[in-house]
Length: 147
Ligand SMILES: [Zn+2]
Image (cartoon, rainbow, N blue to C red; front, side, top):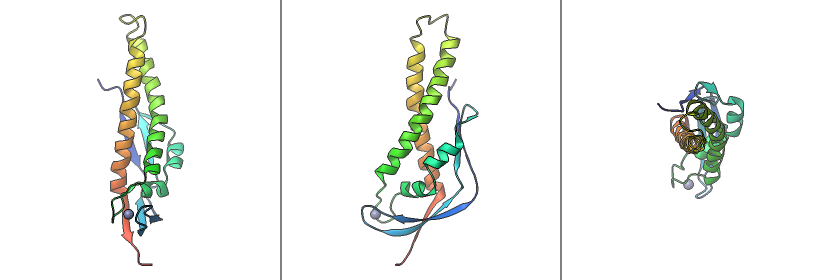
């Protein structure tokens, strides 16, 4: 039985932001579709507004690899990991709580819950990062601009 069910719901809309590669300096116009991705874990929406504020269209465009040199901003990636960690802590605590409740008799010392919590935390961070990078591939289109 999987403990976490993460789902992403994407809103429609399109935003254009300037893209400039920090390594090779290539300038492009990033067209980002979707007003924002709402993240839900176990059917509970996890502070959608906060998640969107942290990773807006501009940040999303920075997550796209540069079309010329393939560089991807580490700062933007780190931000995704940081947000994933916040979501991960909430999900891990929920999972640990469920485990502590359900295995109270077979595991009276409560050794299982922290382990499950830690595992859930890592899984959530990995999942949110993978989902985010997948949505970047789907939602960000880089258009070359001549300047
Ligand atoms: Zn580049």
